[in-house]
Length: 320
Image 1: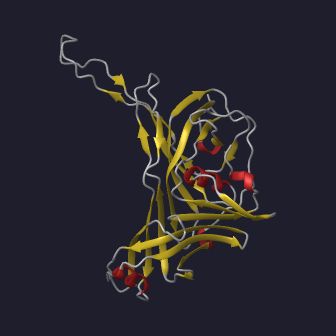
Image 2: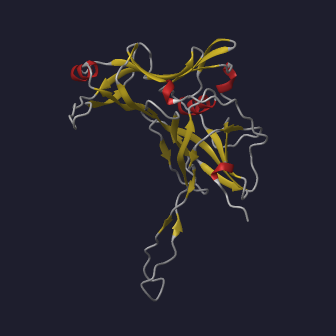
Image 3: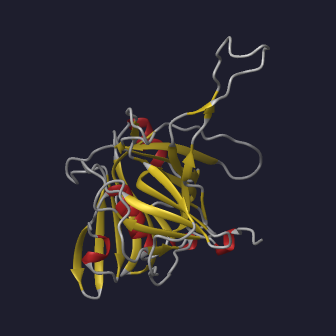
């Protein structure tokens, strides 16, 4: 009997027109590094007295089904746009063929949902998760290595079967970004001496639990959006230190760039820095790690913009 191995697994995804309902048709096959999205239903103890002749417990019972997990995906030129759409909503697309700019904005009143299928063809078994929304995104920036993004996902339901629901999956051309292509700027100027950074975005999703015969959650509602993170830099000037001391906001941009028409940029329009120490930990260089929080900016009319430049037309990331 064959055993499932990760190398043969596949992740398919498609936008939902109706929340919690998997669409028919040909789904998108997405590149990924790992994914633990799936259903869990815990057993709860029944501490009932008087059902036996000893101290042994009564039978446990199953509680509510929870569908959640994380997907770690490569930051690439095309597929990352589908994950950003799930996190932030459909973009506004500008540009002329063949080069387009897809601008995703934070704070949308309503967010889309996808159906996601994790396939184990060796078994075979296919886990179809419906009503999936993206709650969080985390991206780390460093001088070297592959560029990856971690998305925290919350779904409504999960159904397992012996065949796939994905039709004949389609695959986009794969062009990956790398951390060596990264850059960080402050108020439009390159920020020097940065050794590492972390950007985290959260939709503040809340599971809505109601009384249902199928034990599923009713839905997942967005709350207050937050963009936070950390910037670590060698202590060579007082630019960040002064900003933290004065509590003055600045615009920060975190980007990966292949060329002028192939890039991904996260712009936080109003960023505040927490005051950080400059510890001396030995004879080597001195570094400072500044925690940051972003806020709504009246001029930009949002907290964050993710701009993806590629050669995909407006319909690529549109609503179904």
